[in-house]
Image (tube, rainbow, N blue to C red; front, side, top):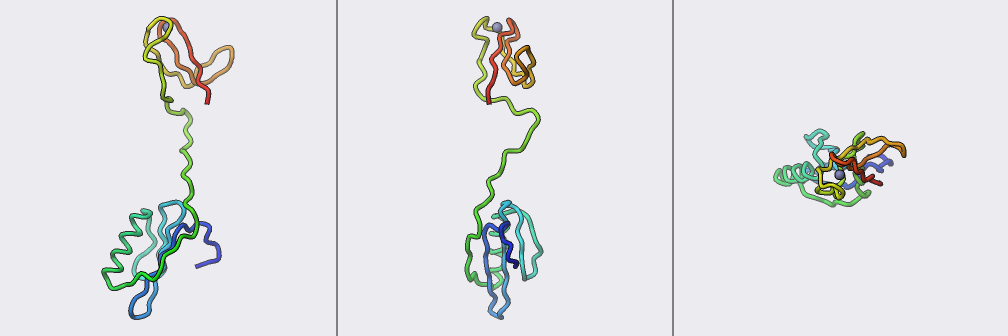
Length: 130
Ligand SMILES: [Zn+2]
């Protein structure tokens, strides 16, 4: 254990009748699991892995002493993508001429470049604003 636990989301402490202790830390990335003591190495898999470890240890005679939240989980940022997926709301067909509408993430024109829905017939375009 260190004084720097900003990365720790939740901690479980287990004790064995013979006096041994284990500390399990779930990190705020919701994936990394640090095991201090016992037979297990550090693992990944988040809460599901913690539950599996707790079940394994309690079945082997360990006792849950306490568990407590340390920090809130880090909100997962949306993965950055070069071409954002098409937003919802594409018109079924062009409101002007009824032809199919296609999505163009990098449509360029006199007024700039950006995502747009374009008609395959009359070239009607509706710009998307973030
Ligand atoms: Zn059209």
